Length: 319
Image 1 (cartoon, rainbow, N blue to C red):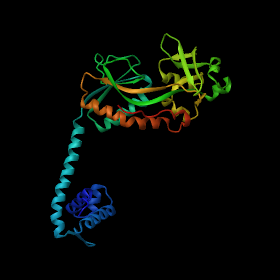
Image 2: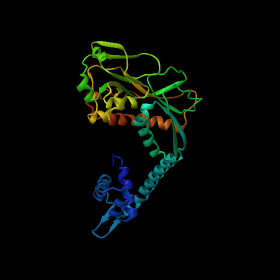
Image 3: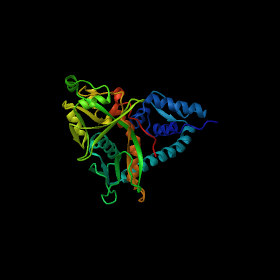
């Protein structure tokens, strides 16, 4: 026999013989009877021997099958032992994971990440600090901080999670009464809603691929929380600048529509930052890996159905 035996079929053979019937093995393993039968028949053909004597009322191993069963049983026990070890390792991950994130990302990005992580590691508890200020991760005892844009701290390393754009949106009722801007120069004639701190001017930089327009703007409503800006836009208070991943529901439902979609903001990065001088705990390493695996799905869920308005959100290379 040149081809190695099908290890999965060997385990299934051992389970069928140990449980005494195809139907009971199917019930225990969740594998259909037809699949079990096909797998074991294929194993017999591959080995060139008959392992089972089947009748309508009984199932018995041949002499060769009984000898072969002893080896398959040890394989099955090894597989079960490996699975039990992995389950035990998962159960052993416990403790408190301390996270930080900007206000606007806490519900649509961070909560889904936490939900799926604690489903895998139920002994983990999570504490989240929602803030838009820069944290001292040692003093504030933060394990992982989700941050938008590159940070200057040399003591931190980061894992890129996704890249997306901000977009301009407005309620259909507002555009019906105020008109629809077609060029950045038109924005000065509209009520504008955007992210801002207490002091400082707001500047929007937009490009259509050939021309770049950057303007210092007077906002009708400035706020340091995109959730509030989103609500104001839906209420028809003006043209709003909002991350595309935060307004997908309102766009799907038609409560908001894209404004000047051919004019785009620069892309921004969302990354997970953590300390370099402290070796990450196993729990932190697992959460960082989990973020990398799950972020693509979360972003796709956030932007599905948006057409061009959400197409700019994409996964970036992991570090």
